Image (tube, rainbow, N blue to C red; front, top):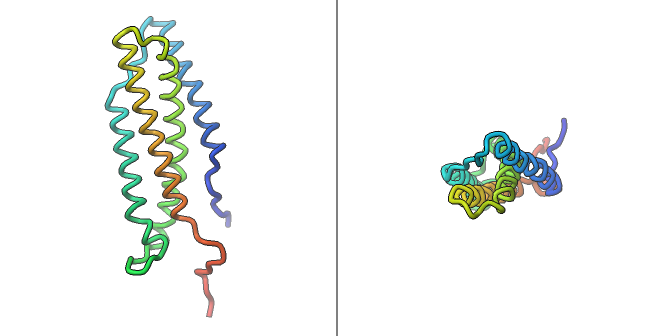
Length: 157
């Protein structure tokens, strides 16, 4: 049986860097081929903010139960395992989205003089902040799902 290992920040930074280069490259290719800017809707940023809030809310609700605090109902083991898997997936996807929209924002930084360039820059920057919120909430949930060392739940009579 393989144990899950905590997410390394270096992995998330690597994912964000690669997807950031991809986002920057998409802007360059689209601008060169069509002469247009990559549109980034504000709805993308709003959706990322909503997902970050939902993940943080789940963490806030589940944390006392995961830690076995007195007065809180213990969480089912399958729910704890699924929460840990959700946290790991969310941190990686959040880093991917953060890098992609970050690459777009960097590419748009030189085009702020046009209304569409400024709109794309600010929408992609808001999306970056929302994706950063997803990564932070996911790392918090993952940390909350850790079992303390020395804890033996498989006690045999």
